[in-house]
Image (cartoon, rainbow, N blue to C red; front, top):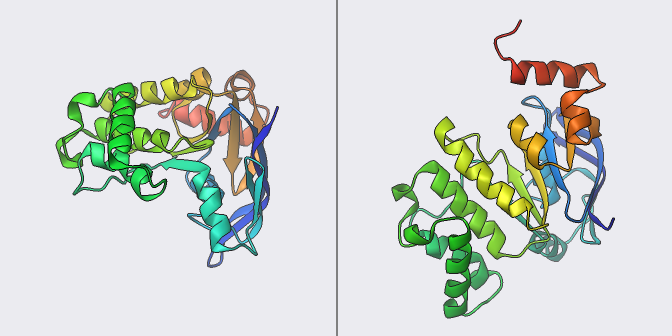
Length: 251
């Protein structure tokens, strides 16, 4: 399997708080890797080090064979790395003063220097795929949270990245809107793109992930196929976490 993402010895601290403690991970082309773990385990920080939204203090990050050293990197290297990735954020991060169509076009026009007419045509096509073609002239505030997140996914897809990073894409949504977003992410997964998804949605992980990684305390505790990790985890921390998630009222 071709390696798409390779993380070696990733360390990250915020002040005296050591968040990531030497994480190693390799992700093959077309894999859908779901990262689970309790709050504060370092999941989101790890995701953000991949595209240098939070630069790691130590270690190397490689996407599609392009490697960047966290300690000594240039601005142009970070730009190149970011071009290979796209991110879907917990809170959508859409431009409030732009329509949904303009939000999706933005990256094509500003980053990839596409002509506006071409960018518009491509964006409408992608919005159709996420079921928002009827809403393309609406502004974010006129849409539900689920629709805004689907627009966020369209904006990531349009850039044709090698890897899409999803940071808890459903955690800001009302429960009744979670399904539509997860269905959109499932459809994206079926296209064969490499995805790393930080989420608490166990059923989604079971159905869509090719691999589940469990993190706690800034390290990878356990990883494997969903049926191994979610059904018969070996590590006590993973067992505790899954018990708490699947049966929150149990002592």
